[in-house]
Amino acid sequence: MQIKSIKLLASISDIQRKYLKDLGSYPVTDELALEFDDAFHNIDQWSSVDSLLDEISQLNKLLDLLDINEGTWLESALDNKPWSEIRNLAKSILSKISDTE
Image (cartoon, rainbow, N blue to C red; front, side, top):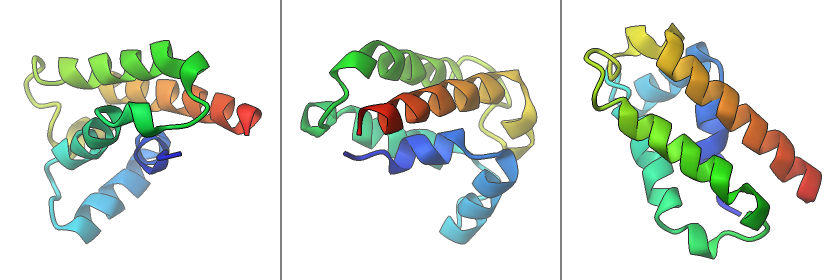
């Protein structure tokens, strides 16, 4: 199953910042969402996620809402509410994935 992008979204903001720096896209955070988006659009290839489709879809919606909020694509926003909600939902999904494997 492709869960790397969910693990990254569930990571603490310092790990996300390091990842973005290593990738060369820092201070812009959109790469975090883009990687999830790529995996989300190939969700039919994932195994054992049928019970999590609602939560995974909700995670996608939260990321889509970032487009509406000014400043949420900068690394300084990683510690703010929209990103903490994304992080918490991603953690919940990961815990349920590990329960099904």
